[in-house]
Each structure stands twice: as structure tokens, then as C-alpha cells.
Image 1 (cartoon, rainbow, N blue to C red):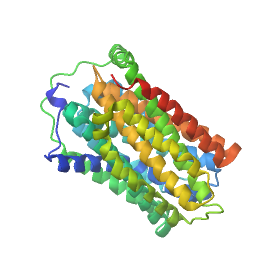
Image 2: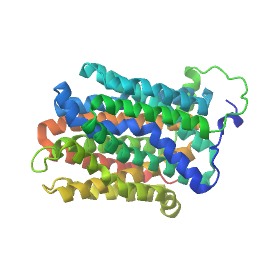
Image 3: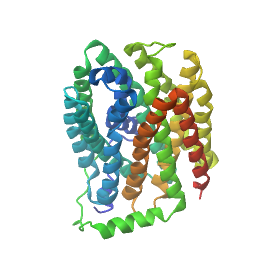
Image 4: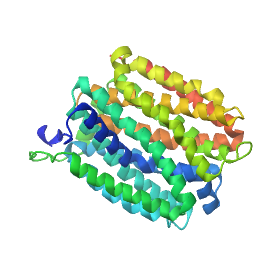
Length: 395
């Protein structure tokens, strides 16, 4: 794709309107990723599965997301951003709807992988587009808006999922989210300008893949950002997956609808994440990542207390800190990529979503063997590793 073909801009002009559109696109792209976690206990009963097994099945979408992100890293230069995002989200409605009638846990996990493939394709192409569209002065704010939409999908998606499942059943829940997928496809078509006529595309093969990936991996700062992404979703998915099983047991004993309202803890993150651009401008990427990770690590002692207000405060801090660090790392990759932003974004997201799958499996095993305390300790270790990697972010 030519340079002119890869810089299609949102139709909405102006900082606030543009940020709202970017955030809404992120919301509709990723709303399926975490919404299912709000009904994990109900799904575990439906399929008669242990928490670690059900958690891994629900988070199997991260396997598809990692694979798709790496695929876009290879082919992203050839893909039209507008059509790629729209078609991915339209197709996403199919596995989403089928989840409501999945007959067994294996087919449920397979459909989640399919969801992940399509979500990550749209996600990675959008991030590449933002990196190409905006200059350095605007890029951090654009990426922060996108991550803010991701935060919104965590909050609203879980609330909607809990409400639909509680009142209308699991099947209706997934049909409702399939409609949101179609709305995302419409938004991509409506709000992204068609690409200009592109020049003939050169065939893409292993040589191009190796060259693009080698160029990005040669930068130690980008390698560190990839590692930070891995650690962030490792810790985030592990904690927010298995806390659901803690909250439905004594001494908390929350019902499904109350469990959905727990995720109002993401409201602080929706307020703080848009500030990531200003944080980077003032204290740099390294300082911004450290600030977010420090907030997240401060949450861990609160998660172990047998009092609901303490746990909710801990979850709020963990969400706010994690998303701030994610916004910093995401914007850093988009700005620091030297050769191929699609490759860099794909490699970052491949690492990010691989971390989610690894966190679901590893922290699920810790939860089974040592309980919630073992899970929280694992989260702390991985966040500490992310803080060490953040030393390399500033150029």
C-alpha cells in the first residue's frame, strides 16, 4: 500500500470529536474480549468446569489475538485499513452469536479463538492507522483515546453481559454482543475515509517478514515495550479472571448482577487513561510506565483483605495503573517504530495477547494450588518484571 493509501483519517475533525470516535471504535472492537469474564461462574456451571479450566477457555481468545496480531505484522502493509477493520468486525458477529449455543467446552474455546483472530485484526490495523495518521505531538493522545475506549469496553461490556445473562440468559447475552460487532463494522465504514488509490502491491514473503521483524527487534527499547505489554495483560487477565470466583464465594457471596456492578471499578481508569499523553510529555515514557505500574502494585495488598470495599479499591487501582501503563507502552511503540508500524504494532499486540493467555493459564494453576493469595503474588512478580523492562523505554 502506498503512503497515501495508508493514512485514511477519521471523518470527524477536532480534538474532542476525534478522540470520541477513536474511543468508540476501540470500545466496539474489544467489547467481546472481557465481557464474558463477568459471567464466568455461570459458564462454569453450564459446562461443569473447574475455575482454571473455564478461565482458560474464556481467555482462549487471546491465542487467536496473538496469532492475528503477528499475521498483521507480516501482511499489514498490504491491508486496507478501512476495509480490514470493517470486514473483521462484521465477521466477528458470527462466532459471537454461535457462542450462545456452543454444545461443549471445546467448541466454546474454539469460537473464542475465532473471536480473537478477528478482534486482533481490527485492533492491530487501527493502531497501525493511528501511528500513520498522527504526528508525534498528537500520537500519544490518539493512542490514549483508543486505550480509554478499551477501558470502557471492560466496564460497559461486563455490566451489559451480566445484565443480559441474568435477565435473558446466556444465549441472549451473546446475540446482543453480536449486534455490537455489527455496529462496530458500520462505524468503521462511516468514520474512516476510503483509502486513496494504491500502487501495485509487491508480494509479501518470508524475506519481508524477517526484514521487518528484524528491524523492530533490533531496537532494545521496542523489545522492552513488547515485554511490558506481555506482562501487563498477564497480570490483568489473571487477576480479573479469577477474582470473579473469589467474589461469588464467602465472605462476599455476590450474585451475577452484583458481580457485574463490581466492574464500576474501571471508572477511575476511564478518567486517568486519557491523561497518558500528558504524562508522557511531562515525565517521559519510562516515568509514565513506572507511574502506572506503581499504582497497580499498590493495589495488591488490598486484594487479599476479606472486606469488599478493600477489594474493590484494589481492583480500581489495579485497573487504573494497568491501563495507564498500557497506554504509555502502546503509544511508545506507535511512535518509536522505525520501519514498519504495522509490523511493530503487530509484534507488540502479539506479545500483549500472548501474555493474556499465559496469565490465564499460569495464574489459573496458581489459583487452583494456592488460592487467591498465590494468584495475587504471581501478579506482583510479573508487574515487578514490567517495571524492570520500563528502564529501556526512554530514548
